[in-house]
Length: 230
Ligand SMILES: [Zn+2]
Image: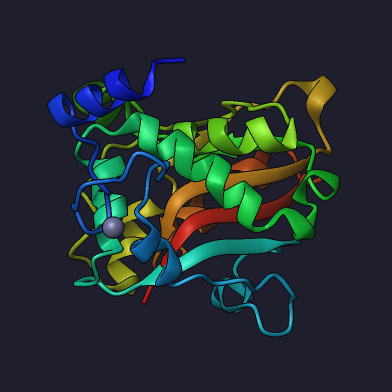
């Protein structure tokens, strides 16, 4: 451990920034400032009856469990978190958020409800451009807490346009058939937790689930996203 004075000097030279409000972090704040943590727009649903995620996917794919940690509007400062892990190269933050998120929903005991974690993949080109897959780093953070294996069973085959400015129907069309699953025969019938950073219309989750169920219709799908966009 660094002595206190050295710590202070370190903070002065390399100030740590809160990824939400972009203010300076105090030495005892871990990665989000206390103020932003207090105001955090946490979601805590998991029950089937009032679960917005499950309702969104109703009729498309069977989902056993679905959980999202927070909701945000496009102009909210909490959107910064997603921009940081997606576009600003902050893979470490993605992993920290994964661990933090898992701790927030510790009482749901997801580790007893799923067997493996499967991150939603990026296309090869996007992964190369970005240098990492934020969903994989979120999964790393989750697996640390849950002690569950991560399986890269999904591949994004089609490299279509970014979905940011598309409406629900366009997103559905864009994602459809864009994923392919490869699951070893010995691993069939697992309870899979699909992990992604954000869910908007559910198009990606539906396309990924369809790809999985196509090769293994005995698999059970649950979904986890860090955020739910309003
Ligand atoms: Zn902050």
